[in-house]
Length: 111
Length: 111
Image 1 (spheres, each protein chain N blue to C red):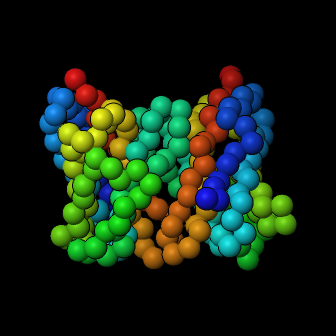
Image 2: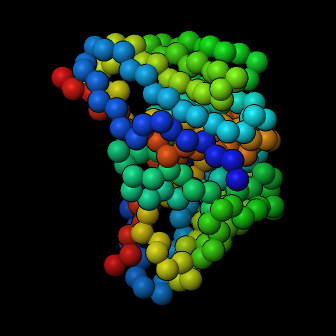
């Protein structure tokens, strides 16, 4: 079955630690996205990539980094510079000019 | 910048009744709109979409209406069931895969 997979489902980060969230898709979609969702709020765009080896900052990129070395993969690193990282992180992918397919999300908590 | 918004943050309906969830958008250049359903702890799921050259589109128990004159989008759910309880997001495609999401409406179905 084609789809988009995020892992892990739950992740705990200590203060000052970098963590990486995985996002893999086998839908052959060119574009991939990372969103952050806080309780009771909508989706805020962190980073997006329209093509391999290229990505752009979204609205809230500070404290985050990404890479797009393969079409299938778009990992997100939450760095120690992100002071309030506790949130639900959603990855999505899309073909050009069509809607997004979302992953099931990763819930990140700072401990 | 321009953004997608929702008229109501919460909606409560009786099981079996019809539900109507509204969304206002402000970018007249948007050419593609999608409704998503998000259950607690999960990623958003595609429900139905509509392009700007249409004013109505029907799916199974769902209908999307687009009024470009007043920049208004609505989602109608017929015979609402307990499984329809979720947060519903509208999204507009600003240009070339740049999707913007509303904050969401929480639908609660009372038995």
